[in-house]
Image (cartoon, rainbow, N blue to C red; front, side, top):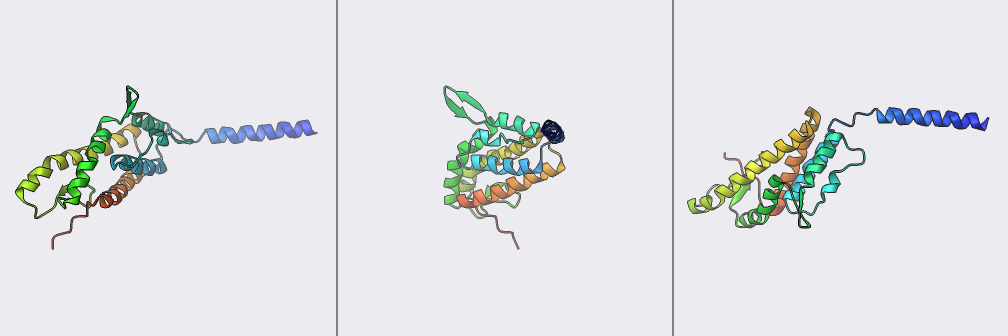
Length: 182
């Protein structure tokens, strides 16, 4: 009798594993989109994060592809972020400095612009840097969504998370939301 019970348990376990294995692990999920949104912005804002954090235990195939991209390169034993992320990381200190001088503000869409009312010389000082930063923010979003072939829910979760992260992290750097004109 115990042999039959053991066989029955084994059969039930096999069925459970089979059903669990049928879960769609190829489609990028909204929870993964939210994780990636915060991870990307943490890295871009100078917060120490590791690429392997994106390798989720139950992650989709698309999440794994993104985690491999995030690994970047290893040059002579030094980790190098992927190009567009590396660009954002390299500008962090300069953006923080400009923010402390009150020269830049954030738009509701999560992009940066010169603060209204600054001098033409100050505007010239920040214009190229902000154009490059904004282009990289757009490119990074497009790259993440392209690498993951994200469906609507996951795309929206990523874009919402990245917007929230940018807002909070930019604010922490001293980049305040631009006041609406009345």
